[in-house]
Length: 230
Ligand SMILES: C[S@@+](CC[C@H](N)C(=O)[O-])C[C@H]1O[C@@H](n2cnc3c(N)ncnc32)[C@H](O)[C@@H]1O
Image (cartoon, rainbow, N blue to C red; front, side):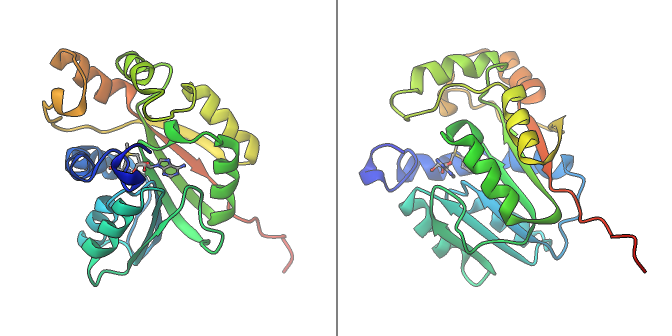
């Protein structure tokens, strides 16, 4: 986290505009996933101001949502913006110990910020119910040419870990015991807001990035097998 008293990821105004700018990715994520969210208990890792969980609840899908993020100001905003919805937020940089039995979990744009990836994978394994899946979208990775330069330029300012490859992320989760799979996001229209997201690229590169390199990783905790006894 950086500046603004460490209350926000970037700043109050930038976090607010980032959440608006991410709506098209959240919608693409919902087009891509292979689980019915109706009535589910859902976790959002790195929830920032809680926009994704509000979207899920307002679409009439989830039963309850939980989100955590180290940015205290953003989490305070998330709690306020949630109003009466059954969605709950906590300031944390690892999954709160008392949170468990999630049927579905998400993160968008968070994996590349996590220094202890093995610890994160272990925490997610503990927090998921048997048969549950963690869908993590990732665009900042070593095989994403447009964002390799972005990572290089922001590594000190944002205290980023080294750039991970997708294969490396997959093998960390696989070693913990997850079944791993990946998809390209089912993208629709992509807002042409390159300067807003801090990129100097041509629109086709931005489209290629979103269509080709922004991936949805799926980590599934195997369902408990029956013992076969009757
Ligand atoms: C690029 S933003 C994405 C926010 C949100 N997921 C979205 O789609 O708009 C990354 C978020 O991850 C949070 N973050 C940073 N380190 C984290 C960690 N170790 N665990 C969880 N979230 C973290 C940041 O505070 C920030 O809110």
